[in-house]
Length: 331
Image (cartoon, rainbow, N blue to C red):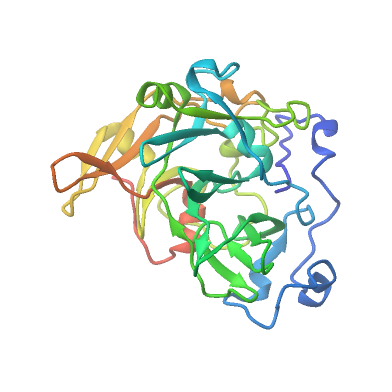
């Protein structure tokens, strides 16, 4: 969505001109229907006034629909601590660097026959992977340019229904109420992905000159006092842009996990923290961002082997917005 501009850390306007359009319009389904004639606005699961413009129009932040990869051993230009979304399906592993995702937010991909959507919302720090199949139909996703609770609102190109990235649920249009299936993925450093998947692949830009890959158009965002383009309530036990590790309706402060290093829950979750990953939303150059650490959530399978579970590393305000009654564990 529209990049955050900090007085302390200004960004060259030329880098933003590809994204920004003036103003942030309020909810107006009648006006939206001019841009979205194929979206059924009579069907919706959320109040329209919770949705606002992110400052860009449909597909102005372009999804990657024909992804290109190189072998992890041949990947150049990625710092060891640089964050990637690491996905493994049936033994096939791919890394999606945030230095690329931050400019595109959605990758429509197929991994070992499974159609997936790899998504990243910079304003919420939410990296989520979905199975793109719903009721026997494989969907392809793009960006609406809209936000709800500062989170990316996607759309599928088949019905042009709108989907909430944070929850994987269709909130407006023909498919309202339908849900995407989450797939376990890791938000990890490039070095950790390379070590665990030496035969893996790494997403690279289709056109290296299309965007300023490796640069952060949201410089200083995760040090801000308040989230950008957010009108909801804030959590009262933790700063809004503090990172939390979320599993379903539960969340733990990453700062707390950093102190503990390892947390085991009564129902078998194992949360671990390890240094060696930098923030994608801090410095102008993503690879130079401050240390935020690697977080992993697993549980023991039937054979005693640790297996990954679905988790996210979100900003606290976003988790609270979608789970207002849930407790964030800070100590």
